[in-house]
Image (cartoon, rainbow, N blue to C red; front, side, top):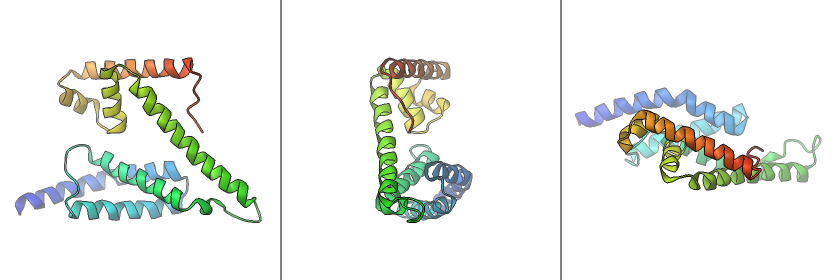
Length: 178
């Protein structure tokens, strides 16, 4: 019982700490304050529900777990509301607005897919560091501890990974923006 109370207090602190960051992340994805408010509320409910059901296990960074939920909810919203991309019949043509929204979503998915493929082409130690830092949201200190390497080694591998990624992007003439 005491462990649950401590766990609950720690979780409440983690939730309070990450609220602003998660909201900013949702805003970055949606560019719409009202939509971000709605999705943030849904994310909060989902996070609390999953915690109560025991679906959260303190195995990584809490913020990364919450951001993953937020990211998935934004994608779900975009998929379910393709017709909501049309803002006004008077101002824009419905077909072109729908096409633009779908096209933006497809381009973003392709960019993410391209980045994942490029990261997988890096040497294994660099791939591990990049995935842990950018995809799992681990700090370099956490990575160093987990991999049993010095922080300088972790930082060096990340630096070389980014240099190699830039070189691959330049060599293949890849454009990574929508």
